[in-house]
Amino acid sequence: MKASEEKKVAFFGKITAGIAHEMKNVLAIIRESSGLMEDIMSLSPEALISYQEKFKNSLSKIKDQIDRGVELTDRLNKFAHSSDETIAKIDLNEIVEQLITLSQRFARLKNVVLKTDPRQRSDQPVIIETFPVQLQMALFACIDSCLNVIPSGSEIFIRSHKKGEKYAVHVACEGNISSPTDLARHILTSDQWPELEGIVASLGGSVELDSSGPGIWLFLSKE
Image 1 (tube, rainbow, N blue to C red):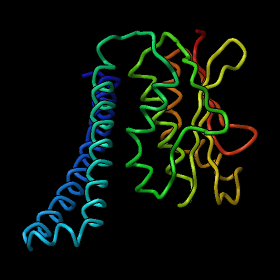
Image 2 (cartoon, rainbow, N blue to C red; image 1 turned 180 degrees about the horizontal axis):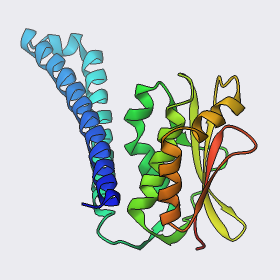
Image 3 (cartoon, one colour; image 1 turned 120 degrees about the horizontal axis):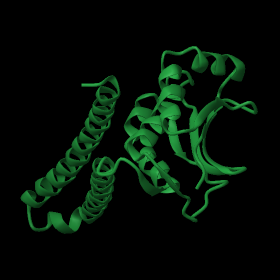
């Protein structure tokens, strides 16, 4: 197996394992909430009236977790099918949203908030023709590079942009970052940086550190 194929397999394995853990958490919360309801119901018929508030809270938790489980499985299904075509037209905003959902567990383990930038969010699709798997690998590598160097309690904002004739994704780090220069140096000298450059080069793009603040710019091809 070629090194590039091995990296793809490892990437799919890491994302799938992360979602499997998330789904275990979803099912555990549903089991805990439904178990509480069963315990209350076994007390007596009158208990249903006395513990209505607990029932409502448990049902609300179950509903929230079902919605979360549906989103996770939907995202995972789309992620699995991203390898159906080597090159495809995709919505860059949708891919960003997808990677944010799929990467939440890794961010949470580092106590970092990962989300799109609400100040600059656009609902307009950004359609580009690219290699879907490599693009997601590049986005995840950007996220992972930041997670490995930013302190606990920080935030990572991700958004697609149009820069001149090219489209780009901006991964910006915010929070209690004492020295953005040191953070940038750590990213640039990490083992992940050459691998990230290689993935982006396979897309016909380039990757740069943000000169205006801690973060990464991922430049892609034309529309």
